[in-house]
Length: 99
Image (cartoon, rainbow, N blue to C red; front, side):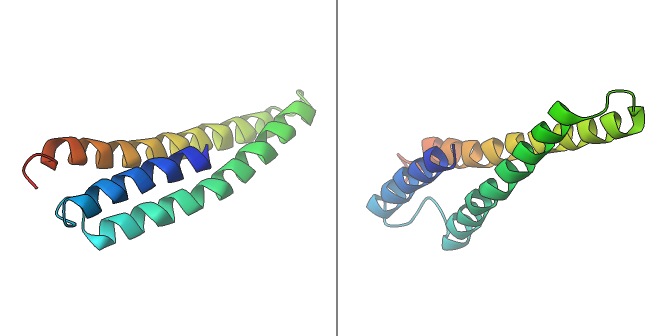
């Protein structure tokens, strides 16, 4: 999925460049690049947590709950990542004609 986010950002950067960089500030683009780079770490955490849940002793309720909370937080991070790129897309939609 990281590659799709990178592709999306690259398209937005191209559109911004075409519009003389009037849609996004460099800081916005840099921040989104950083966010996308963080995606790999989130994916690693996701894989680890899923493996932990597959192999967990289901009688260890506290451990099960802890891993489920971790999974919840990871999904929240994924959602946040998508929301960030989505906000950039919406900004491009709203400002493209006027730039």
